[in-house]
Length: 332
Image (cartoon, rainbow, N blue to C red):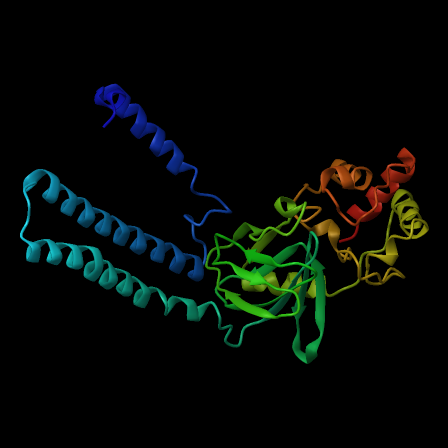
């Protein structure tokens, strides 16, 4: 131990600092605060492997102390070979094999969705296309937000455009790569209602760090009500300002990239905006959803999200910008 930690006060401060660091491990994007069956399995596996690593470290340390402190004299050749082979080969192989046998069965559950609902998630640059699969192969399209019923296992069909991404909601389960041209699959079984943050876990370009999403876990009855509402068309603008905003949206050609069900906007390049007013974030988890956030995104998209495909509408008059914000906020 260093000289600084021989002082009881310094040791106490170091322990307190460690406790404070551990207190930050909880939260909606923490693997140490599992809110689903799959995340709990990963958490348990991490604890077991950590304990196994400690046992292995203690074993190696004990051999080192024995050879250098307890019996530093020359060993008989046979004894030395037994120590090296037993401690350096046999024991680690047995320990690691045991951990492997323990961990492999855990992977199966997250690859099976049983008879639960399926959601298709496609990683774009840099946002998420989300489609809820209904009977009859009908799909409800959303974006940048995943909603799941609590107490049920939902299958996620994962795809990607252009580059490799990785889907990860730390509080709900492990991560799965999303590869262009190849469909991958995972499933999640959340156990605790709440809002959990997901993130792309594979570097995918300039705005990789700004490619997040909210995962909203709801009671089954609330999820059913939400899904029925999500399937409907957007609410028509009801105020003079929102009606003006709809005209600005059409005039600027936004419908060529974005779809709003119930209107002439049928674009497929960007996120579906049908119910954007009910979502928890803008720009794939980058901003909130206040009117100021909408205005900031519309007027400074490139500054907020480097290399984003969406043009910046910094040339709009303040009145037109406010009207467009009112229209988008009203899409519920």
